[in-house]
Image: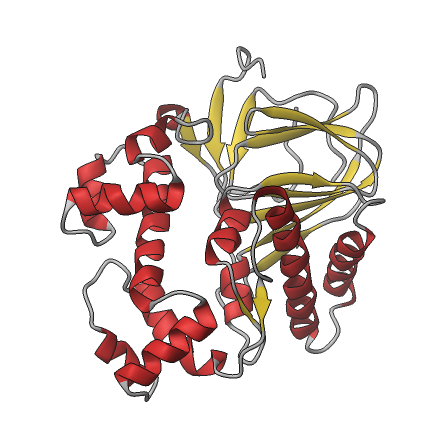
Length: 316
């Protein structure tokens, strides 16, 4: 990709309701210019785009790709991107910005997603154009979800959560077919709800030190029962899950701050830089210093501007 005319990278976060972290932007005003922006941008959440009319081009990381009417785009929060219409046209789009982890974990009794690395990558690192004619089920799920925001019927949030659970399963399987082989990604487990207090605590206090016994007490389980249940539902041990949370937080800090690797390792909860480096490489397949140099928001970090997320198309 020729980036000589790209002047800056902008961080465009959206404020999502913690109880229902989904924002839908749609309507006839969402017709994109045929002028390519000199700026790339990234968000704090997953962006899902639905090209309703016309054709467009996108920059996804280092790749330039074509998008056609009926296609769905999936852009992880760490992926820098921009979209513009074909010359002489104004393609019509609808967008959804969503925190899938928070959205799905807030519903007790739903399946617990297995394959935590894939689920994380899908939300933060994955980008793809999913042709509508090849993936009509995904297109219909997104279109119906968007319609729910227009209809705004009683309890529509429950319907949207269901659609996004199905969407997540389909996209995770697409991702898996592209990059992985292994067991099915979704496993229904009746004990999911019982782990919610521990999962919530671990997410909010991932940088702190705490014992498995304290997590078990939150869930009113014995430590042995908690370990067995956690491993069965989450597909990994409590310690490994905590390490994943810390590394994922480190990725965000590497991408959006000037903090040193040592300071980041301490900020996310590691007491040893060697332990941080070892675990980072095991999960991300790169050293922290190498990750910071990879294309994406980290590559242009010193040029990144933090601005509000767009509530209308960028004026070009």
